[in-house]
Image (tube, rainbow, N blue to C red; front, side, top):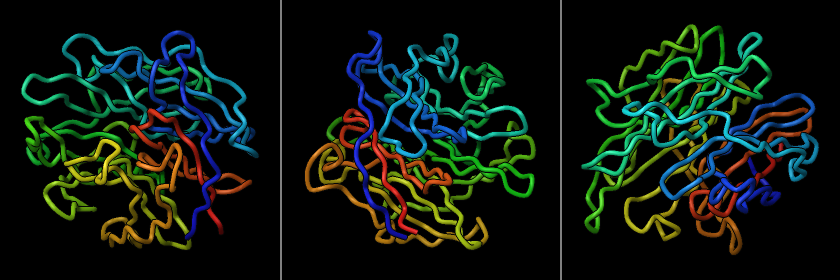
Length: 308
């Protein structure tokens, strides 16, 4: 499969006095006549808020509306999302919208911890309410670090979740950097997920991090895209996030071949140093991949179109 880049859509410019930097982790809901893109923006260097904008489904470069406030509040002191919230996956289930999100909490020994929460909307994704103060995906005996950034889809009445799982914290240049791979969890109700702790897309070495998986199904083959980076010089450097690729015919056994992603950084411009956090959405007008560019989304997000 080949992707053609269309261009950047949006970057923040101190919108409404609180969208100060970043438009990160674009997460897209198809509303038939438009696309609603949830994204994380930063009110400060260390605190993310989630909001959304609406795009023309025929021409996603055309912005129809930008929401003027966060859709979720930070959690209570001591909870998993007290220091920030980022969107991850969105699913329509019956007459509701399920928004799976990553919660941030600061730590003393390492910089942060990430776990997964769930908020539900009954007004077509305009507003959301958290289902609990606690996470639906957490650390456990097999996964002692983070469980975050899930992609979720429904098939055969099963919620299939692919998510980023922490594998280690590595000290580099006197700073701890997180590494992670991709794991799988399943649920019958979209709330209670079973985690088996098995890596399905593994890192190529102990310094690699893989995150933000998304799946596109074509002719009984599951195509997974994600982003991967190294642990040194990855902040717009030589080991910054790039788009990777794996495929499977059973959702269990995956073959990794990042060269087959067929999309890479540009020679110059907003995505010339980094491509991160892909999210794929199918519409009657085409299949789009939304993604972040340089600076983990500091330069904004744009999209590419699949050439079928």
